[in-house]
Length: 235
Image (cartoon, rainbow, N blue to C red; front, side):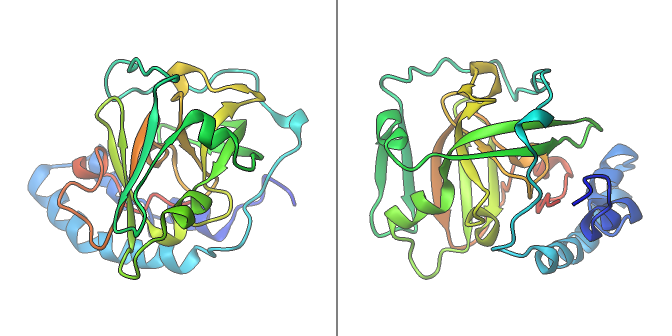
């Protein structure tokens, strides 16, 4: 597959049918942009949900394609100091079996590795190898309740975000603890960060400490989304 070919989803982004919240955020004259954004967001989400194929794999690249430069660091606040020796990932909410998993617990699970393109709304991209645990495997361990429709992520720096359940269960959605074959650097989200080829960079939370399954979205959907960015954030 030619990586330069434009997908239907990319075409929608460029044509303005998707990601329009970002465009409004850039030229926002508050009341007008907010009104239009609220009107168009449900359409954006419906279009992107239709385009998401929950079991279809996104393009992956050979190891030779990895770009050596580091990802840009866009921290919500200063890099949090998290002791990996005592760290516990909390999985709770609409689950039958709430869990707390150490890094040792996570590293005993099957390692999934993938080389994908990380795309930021600021206009840059990088091809990166991520290694970690499939999020869907963790969710399965916690036994989600039938009404769980969304996943809410809390980070050690105060960042927060939420995803639709089909995206969270996509086979290429990882909680990563490796980057380019090495332990994940602190500045890039260690000990755990989200990594997926189906979401824009602002959806891929770093320093994830809690994964909460929920039945409905709260008023605070995500840090950037609450400031006008599109909630679905799909590619």
